Amino acid sequence: MFELEIQIQSWSDHLRARGNFTDADISELEDHLRDEIEDLIAAGLAPDESFLISVKRLGNVDAVSHEFAKVNTENLWKHLFIDPVDSIAKKESRRDIFLVVIFALLAGTLIKIPGLFGLGFDDLGADHFYLRNMSLFILPFIAAFFLIKRKANRKTWSIIMANFIIAALIINIYPSFSPYNTEILSSLHLPLLLWLIVGAAYIGRKWQSSQGRMNFIRFTGEMLVYGVLVSAGVMVCGMFTMAIFKAIQVDAGKFLGEYYVVYGACAAVFITAYLVEAKKSVVENFAPILAKIFSPLFLVIMVSFLVVMIITGKSPFMEREFLIAFDLMLALVLGLVLYVISSRNDQQPPNLFDYLNLALILTALLIDGVALSAILFRLSAFGITPNKVAALGENLILLGNLGGLAWLYIAYFKKKLDFIKLEKWQTGYLNVYFIWTAIVAFIFPILFGFY
Image (cartoon, rainbow, N blue to C red):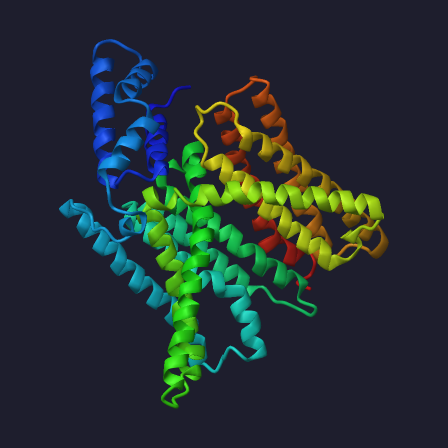
């Protein structure tokens, strides 16, 4: 079924991905597009026909982008600091910066509050407390930031914040006994679950739509890429502070350790979220390039690993530490695949990176198959433990995700379906991750007696 608003949003996102348009440019072009569509619909054409004709009249996106690049002479990094010309947009930008500062301070202060009750970072009890709650100090504020930006209603606020409150109550009420396997599993899976709830705040009313969820996947990838850069800047600033104070025989290490690390880390998270959201037309120009660079590199590395493993007859999967490392690697590979998919134009014919993506998926499937066999062997040889069951479930979920993508890619290459079907299947698969992370975070402790 043709959805006009989703198609217009997709067209606007593709313009942003070119990197040559300001937000004002895109808004102006979108207004022209909507006017054309309305005129054609009024003349008796169907919405899909009106959309296609209107896009054609505005011109090829690449050609329009190239012309805008000639006119917009500001260099890329200047775009990050250009204030909006529109008075309303300028007011919203200042409000967002104010929210970033306030929420970073609130998150940092919440992290420091337990210290007022004698629970320091170096205490054994603090290790467990912060392990359970670290994501709850930050993610609710990120959700609130987007709820304010999206002007969410009270019902949406209540539902999303209720999820954070319920998660906080459950994770802190649960007891935990040595060797703390279920507590560690819950603490590792809870941030993933809560991040998907943040996604509902980020997307707003479009959470059920494929396009909305794909936008969130894209946003997540950009957060990771730019989070690393912002964090590196925060660390450099900290080292510079220590160095200049040391030059006058003042030790700033205590201040940095107790305050700068906490508040600086919180600030890095919120600054990253703000930059990715506010400067899409710039940010989206970099992250897809990085994904396309690293995808073939990972393919070469993984194929080389498989060849060497077969030739030598040695398998690393009998060691638990290697299994965990390969699970993380498979998740990273899946992330690269999804980001290439999310940054792709649906109307574009198959290209080299589509075939590289399929090759990467098939190679990851082979490795996942070997890892699964090793997990099943360990279960039969050493018995059932929470860690083994969690590893088995995660590998099965990754296997289903990668297998589904491979099947749909092949069907796409055979022209049996449109690329949008592949996107819809993947965004629908987010529900599987949501359910699984909830099971591990909240059900596993009960199943395994909180050990």
